[in-house]
Length: 475
Image (cartoon, rainbow, N blue to C red; front, side, top):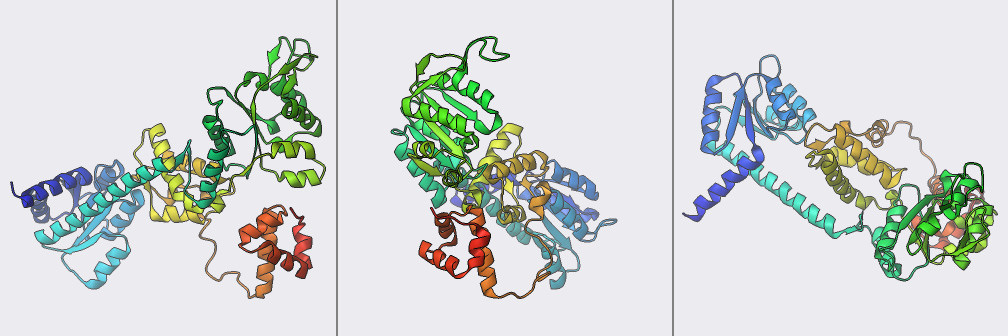
């Protein structure tokens, strides 16, 4: 068998695999017969109809990815069908056919989203070239998906994905300290993945075979939190009908993760300090002291240095917890990770929901990148989980996304509500907002602004209104 024949067989196999059934939408019987013969010669299956709704049903169920459509259809024009087909599945390829070819009509069809524009009678070589190009495009997409999956596995760090410099720095620090830490403080906004980092530290530590216990300190009042952490004896308080160990005893020989430790009261902070200093606890209502051997990871979305300055957090506890500090960046600081996170969550929820969504349309990807993500990675996961659940095509489109993301990049008309302001005012407003975001932390603000700390101080001294509005304090 000649190499050209082998290449042809491979091409036909590829077409069969990716194109599934090609739909022919035309009410001209001679055109339908001619197209069927051509496609059969190419080794492709075809279905023909004059009913646009039948083709839309085929597209909706994923049975076809390519449609040959006459531009003049009774009841529904080819361009109207084209828009409806792309709305149902943005990944479908519609090839428009016409007896009256013109450059203007071809451009109009392409603008509406047509893949190609062919004149009747259809030239077999021209159609074959179009399908060959489509096959190459589908093959390229398949290879890209394979590369993305390999990249995803290479850049996955104990269930966390990221390739941005900020996240690679977090991963590197976590690897370095995992075998040696006793106390670690994780800081970052809500939803950034602090608990995942804590789990990764535990999994890489020498006590990985021990238990990993989690306590959300903001979810309980002091009495419940104390009982949860330290345990209690029977009769210690109303409802204590038996003796129970707390999380510190439960995780003895392992790791305890205290989430939102910044929300604890000063009285509870004093008890936590004793655990850290002496590695000993007392159950509620018992004088007996129990020695424990644990690794402690604390997390907070607060600026603990500011809390110490305000008298809401014990300075001695802060320094004990802050032996090693890892700051987990917000999603807004690592937008280059969004495509990787999208691939990760699409793969995850495809498996969970038993679906085969291939990814996002370009406009959906654009909407995600234009959104501010106040809820960080957790919000992104929730958005993609919901979108994948409701998506009816192979690609998630903007209509599958929540309203606030749909509208995030649209705003008003260009120039609407715009008025000229001095550049100095724009700069001052930007610095003020960054300072507010950083809760007055000048070091962090200077890093986000991309200027030196000295330059920021000079701005603040020169503009008293920024200093007053920002409410800054140095660190």
